[in-house]
Length: 174
Image (cartoon, rainbow, N blue to C red; front, side, top):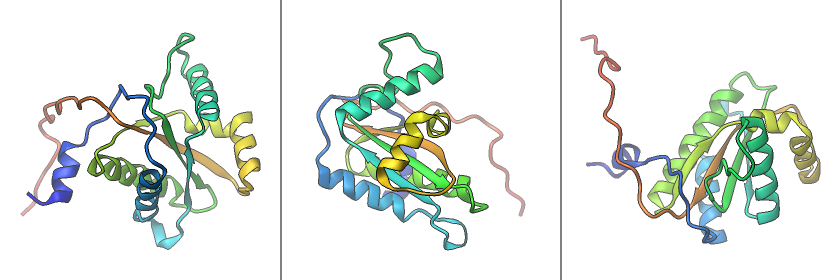
């Protein structure tokens, strides 16, 4: 089987990560792969913010937990030491699709590199709040950016089995 198709079919969302930090070079490689995602009209509206600083990572996790309504102590990033936050500029009509494609490429790049990943939601709410505005200001990013998603990234013990695919999801007209 083609290695890309194999990666697509064997990638799983990981919900239990080891605390070991991913080497910086590997994070950079995965981020760079995400930047090559397809995008509408070549706008390249999405940006990736790689968060490896534990203090900031934990602060974002706590904000995400509060938004999600979970009890204190729950980590919505499942212990992943790296968060790849994908944001996209709303001024482009394809921003949401562009950011979603970046998320998909990040997860495939992680899987093909021997890492686990999981798409974590609530980035939109975070970016609309104080923590998002503070983050953009700190990085000097200007514009009307929406949080698309977080790619939780790290090492894992094992991946879950694939769920059986639901029937009636593909149709062919010949």
